[in-house]
Image (cartoon, rainbow, N blue to C red):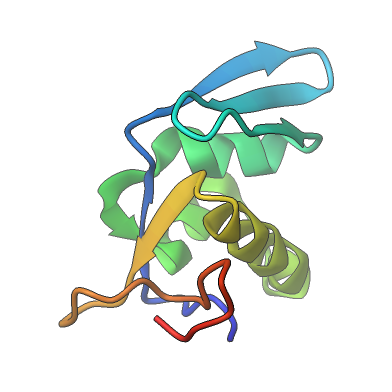
Length: 105
């Protein structure tokens, strides 16, 4: 399942971003996963992901064009599966994508 553009994005409370020359490192203190964020625009999206803005709003604020959205949506889906971000669908308590165990959320 893909990330809906109307999904609301927040960094997991246990995740810290550390700026690096190549972009940033995202570290999850709960599951000890480390992700290398290699694009500054993705870092900008995550830094602004405060749980109040939708994917579409975050992309617009970071200057992500329509042509670039598929790769950024795929990155967000990967980050959600690794529990770095939480993406909730408006009007539900469900997360947007399939969880790591393969069961639909």
